[in-house]
Image (cartoon, rainbow, N blue to C red; front, side, top):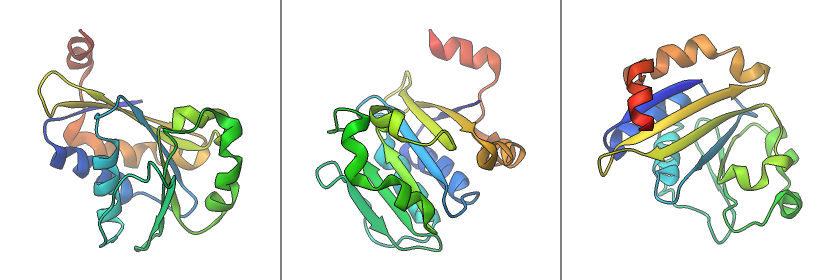
Length: 169
């Protein structure tokens, strides 16, 4: 697991941009965290790094938006769903089989419907107004095989073990 600290929305977007640079077709990123922790801000940085030029907004009421970039992006927000059973209509398998990257906000809501192969990004509020603690966990071969690349890309925001312990207090 990678534990990161950002102090501004722009830094959170820079983390997302670093991850987007490592993204491959068929990748799944699952975003979780409290309301207002920065999931959509993260998604905006990720999309911009993929070359998406249109405005990226949370698809809370439409559930899914698609964007064109160097890799296309499927952006889902499943906050309003009550569980994995309600995810059937999203055609997650079809989205993940394509040449796009899929990013799911509030992914823990439908966790049972998502494949284990994913990169989970948990965003938590920090002590300052714009401080965020990001916990990034690769799972499955596709992301785990990029662990070294992830570590290098995320190093500017990495929190050492002492800082992590104090961040939890």
